[in-house]
Amino acid sequence: MDTGKSAVSGWLSRPAGWHVRAVLGLVLVAGAVRVGLRTPDGGMDNAIVVRAAEAWIHGRSPYADRHFLYLPGAVLAAVPQALLPAAVVRYLVPMGVTAGLVLGWACALRLYDVDRRSRFAVYGLLGLALGFAPFGHLVQLGNWTVASAAALPLALLLVCRGRWVGAGLVIGVAVAVKPLLAPVVLLFVFAGRWRALGAALAVPAVVSLAAALVMPDPAGFFTRTLPFLLRGDDAFVRLYEASPSAVLARLGVPQSAATLLAGCAAAAGVWCAWRRWG
Image (cartoon, rainbow, N blue to C red; front, side, top):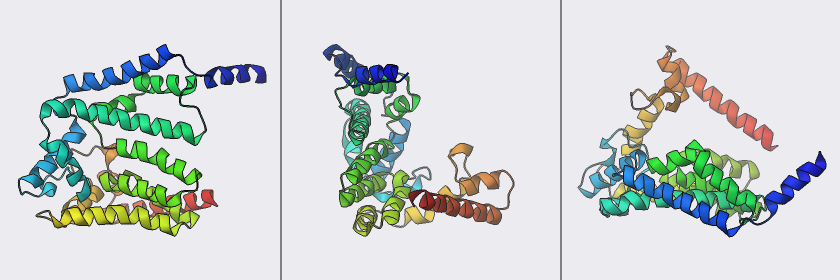
């Protein structure tokens, strides 16, 4: 049994042939081009951010659209895309998302000291591109979650190399674009890495403040988006996407009790993470 496992591991660790790497490159490029041909606006999620940037360019509040659920920094990040021709954006966005996913995969390989030229690395990425639905969905939607998909393994790689502040900066940049990795700051708290924590918090705070000051509705994220995220009372937000308090409220639990239960669940999750860290 051990001999068989060693043989398989040895085969996977050896370099992949040039033809396999060529096929991988063709698959990645073809997937992005396919999305560009079928999706004129560059993807649903991406289009929401671009519309917010266009609203800001024309002097309107990006948060007038209640479905724009990002921090103010995301508006400025989307401005270049809002100004580019649609014929360029429809191909540039899926290419960029694919590159971000490849970066995340490469960082994950380095995290476990796996050679990026190995069969495991090449066949693994090929399998993700061809058979892993979330991979294709991110490319098709132009989803800004790709920033988190690339930032998380990169930050963990930096942590394993002892570069905590660098990891904090990476997480901060990702949160400024989309606050999906905000819970990761608990890692810096548990580890007592206060400079890294400061970097992770300072980047989105400074970027968001600077962006908010040039918007007609500086507090829009707090007055419109944050309440909407907590309530989730909109057909646009499906049940599995809503916050726990919104889900409980939809199931008939009084709002105050739903909020209390959701808060207790969050606290329990933090406590479990702390115990696991210890």
